[in-house]
Length: 381
Image (cartoon, rainbow, N blue to C red; front, side, top):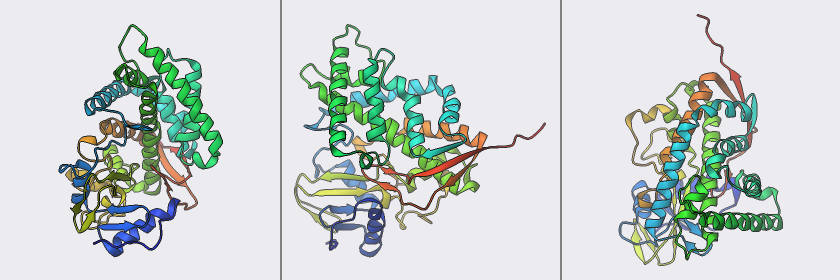
C-alpha cells in the first residue's frame, strides 16, 4: 500500500517540490492526505486515463459543465473534430499574421506569460468569435481573458467581482448562442458556432457557453502558457535555440506540461499497482512526475531537445491519453512551433526573472518574468 503524508499539500508553488519529494521517497504511487492517490508510473497512468477496464467513471476534462458532462460521447467527438478542423484551417490561412503580432506583443520586451496569452487572443480572436458577433460579447470575452485566463488572474480579483464577471459572461454568451441557433444558415464560421450548432434543441445554452469557455481557456490560456514556457526555456538555454522547433515544443511539454494533473474518480473498488482504490476515490495522474520519471528519462530535469530525435517515448502524456486525449494537440503544438520558428530566426531571446516558482493551479503556468528579443545580425553577402 502507498504511504500517506501527514498533512494536506500546500497551495501554490510549494506543491510541485512536495510531490517530487514524495515520489522520490515513497515511489510511483502515494497518497496525499486530503487530496488522494497520485500516480507517477507511466504504465499505470495510461491504464487510468484509457480506462480500458471501466474501473473509473467516464470523464472528460474538456466537456465538464456545472451539471455534469456534455454528452453523449458522439457529441463530444463531433465538437472536438469540428473545432480542430476550423482552427487548423484558420491558422493555415492566417499564418502570415504571426510575425507582425509577435512584434507587437513580444518585441522588444514583454511581461510573460501574459503577453503570450494576449498575442494568441488577438491572433485567434476572429475564429473564436467571428465578425458578425455583437461587440458587447467580444468585450465580455476580452474581460474573461484578462480576469480569468491570464495566470494569477483569480488572485488579483475578489470573489464578488469574479462572480459578477461570470454572470455577465454567461448571460451575454447564452444570448449570443440562442441568437445563432435561430439563424437559417447552419454553417459554423467560428468556435462559438461549432458548439452552439452541435447541441440538440433540448440542451441548455449555458452548456454551450461552458464548452466555449473551455475552448477559450485551451486556445488562449494553455497554448499561451506553452509558448511562454518555450521562450522561457530557450532564454535560459540559448545554446538550444537552433534545435528544431517541434523538438523545442515537445521538450517544453515534457518538463512543464500545462495540463499536469488529471483526476479520475473510481467507479468501483479495484487494485491499481500496489494500491487499493475504493469506489468514489479520486486517482490523480501526475503528468509532471511521469515525464520526469528517472526510470524512463535520462537526465530527466535537463532541457534537452535532442532527446526527441528518436520519436516519442511512452512516458509522455501532456495531452492526456486514450479516447479523451486532447483532439487539438497537433494544432496547438504546431501553432507554438510556428511562432518559435519565426521568432528564433529573427531574434535571440533573453530572460530576466527573479527565481520565482511556477504558478501552480489547474494549469501549470510559468513564473512571472520578462523576455527581451534582440534582433539577430544578418550576414552581409
